[in-house]
Amino acid sequence: MTSSSPLVGHGQPAAYFTFASLTELGVPHATTTRHCPGITSFAEPILPEAPKPPFRSEASEVLGATGLEMGRVSYARQVHGADAARVPAAGGFAGLVDILVTAERGVPLAIFTADCLAIVLCDPAAGALGVAHVGWRGTVKGATQRAVRAIGEVGGQAGSLRAAIAPSIGPCCYEVDEPVTAEFARAFGDRWRAWATPSRAGRVMLDLWSANEALLVEAGVAAGVDRESAAVHRVPSRAFVLVSAGQSGPPGHARRAALRPGLGVRPALALPARPPPVRITLP
Image 1 (cartoon, rainbow, N blue to C red):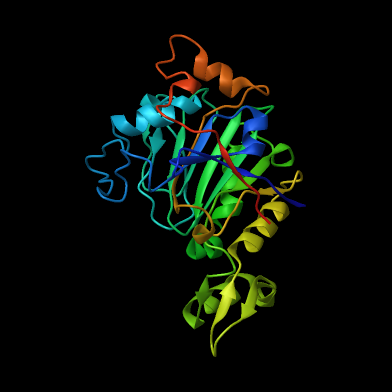
Image 2 (image 1 turned 180 degrees about the vertical axis):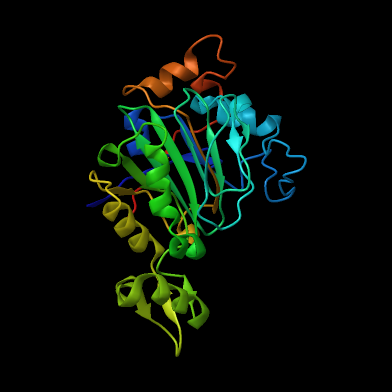
C-alpha cells in the first residue's frame, strides 16, 4: 500500500522540508534544499582518510530548530552500492556505504542526494532507524532490501517498519536507455517493464519510486510506503540532503526535544525570520 503525504516547507524560499508522516511519529527530521546554508557535501567531497562533518555552523543553526542534534550527525561517503553500516554511537563518519542504521537515541543520520532516492525506515516500537541512498545502481544491487535487513540487525522488525521516500527523480523525467535497462532485466527479469513507460526509440521513462516501493513491500514492510516523493523539479528547490533523528518518540516528541533545555539546539520558534509553513500536497 502506498500513501501520499504533504511536504511542509520552512522558509521563503524553503531551506528545508518536513514530512507529515515522520512528524506524526515524533521523528525530528529535515530534507534540505539548495537554499539551506552551510552544507558542504557536494562542494567539498568527503575524504575517507580525513573525513570532515559536512555541516557548518550555519546549517546547524537552521536545522537545529527541528530538534536534530547536529553535533552528533553520522554520515558516509556514498558509493552507489548496497553496503550498510551501523553508525558510531557518538555519530560521525560511518564509512564507504549507502545505508546507515542506528538504535542510538538522538543520533541523526545524513544521506546526500540530488536525483537519487533517499529512503527512510523507522520502527517506532524498537527505536530503530535507517536511511538509504538508492539510485538505479542501488536498486539493481539490492540496496532497498539490504536496508530492511540492516534495520533488523539493530533490533527493528520488517513488519513494524514505516517507510518514506524523499523528493527525488520521478517517472515524469527519468529517461534511461539500454545500459540501464539491461541491468534491470538482469536483476528483475521481465518484471522491470512494469516500472517503465516507453519513450523515444530505445529509451524508457523509469519509475524508481514504484520499483522501490514494490521491493520494500516484498522485503516485509507490511505497513506500506509513504510516498513523500516529489519529482525534484516540482518542489521549489531540489532536495539535496535528508537528515533524520536516531530514534523516534511519541507524537509531539520532536517539538519537545527542540525545546528541552540542555540539548544544545535552538527552540523551534527561534529560526530567524521564518514565515508560516507552506504546504505542498503531492499526487
